[in-house]
Length: 302
Length: 275
Image 1 (cartoon, each protein chain N blue to C red):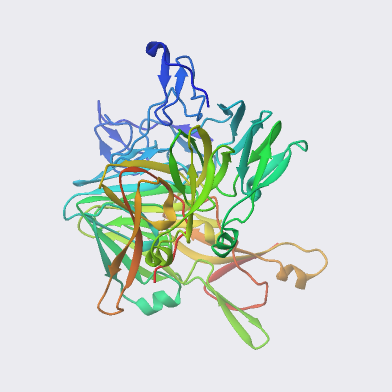
Image 2: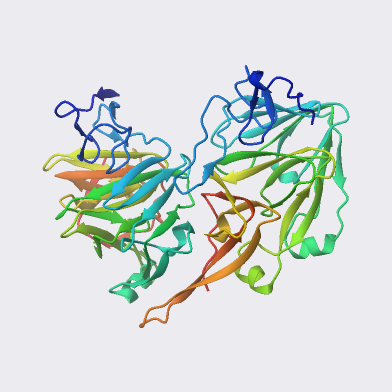
């Protein structure tokens, strides 16, 4: 691990290493993302940046509204919404709310496809004034991603905790799949899920809060630089980062057929841009049967 | 539980969590283990974090002690003195000295409890000796010393252990609507002290927050997040209708808690599906 000190700008102003926001440096945490200020960034020799520590009760400011992050094991995001300010979320992450906060449905485009893919077909939206809080049901970290106007990120499905109204919500096919055949039956597998959520701030800056399991690590890939990650470990990526499948077969000295049965499924991500992964992830489902077709992929036989 | 007499207020420290009186030199409360050298952590909306018990913190009840070990899935290790006892659901027992005698608490309404999915058998351990307890998920121990005359309602299966002098019963959740949509099951555990203090330890999933509601003040809580409440707090189900023109919509049930009294919630909870 190496440590890089955060860079103060000017006499008092402070530029957050995590989100790049400039603040006056008088508070203990960045008002845009809640990262503790004036702490050294923890970077592995391979370039993975550990998500910056966040002090309990760190407060984020979003226009007239604010958000306080409470707790460390399974943190809750407690929004104090100003009148007319709003957020949206999947309804099962709601922890508590005040009576004054109105909640309603936000319908989504492509509902049938989303339902077929196991994604939420409805989002719930809440309007201020008042407090409303959210948390998920897994130990992990909250990632605050302030999005500037024109900025977008691709997020794996089910990672959204809550987003402010200024953030547009869309989705696209992952185009990461493979088919296996067992007798006459063909099964299609989506190691990353069928769809990726895309969150973008078109006109106004907004805030996106994600919840990841375990610890979160972020890496900046240079143009053309690629790395193999477990598909289920991906949290988000910049839209400029491309993805494809990678099949890896370990060396087996005595039987070529057996070596093809043993395979590792990877997601190859190629820069430029950021990727974020979580340290607690589900095993990738692979029944080990013959792959008959797949999305664009690379292969390595050792 | 015996508390030192408050003869010299300057030399004593009052615990903000359990109101126990401690010597001024103490770093943690001798009755609940809450750190005395740290400020309360309270959100702007009024939720107070349950005290984060430092690893290996020790506190006392009667002539026995409890040591909290670990921080991610903490263990409560009880050193029971001769004549002291505790009760618990048997599946939370982590280890014990072979010499610690075990028995079973006689419970009224056994059939009702079985039908409601509540533990039919509550185990009892008597001192002397050591017994340790933990649950199966990341979370916090919530140490609640109960003063005489207190009544506390606890989500079923959330209590880790209680001292033998606390009366254990169960309270049927009132109203079919509450049972069907409240997400609490049919019953809540009720712990009552009469003329003696007692110790109750809960395990909350994730982080635990407490809020004290004024008379008539209310808050809406995800039913799966409810952990405990004073018996003075009323709990009702409130349906939130969520509709869209195309799909007709759905309904979400939230638990409305109405003061006066304390309400405790956990940040990691079992989600109960909407209709």
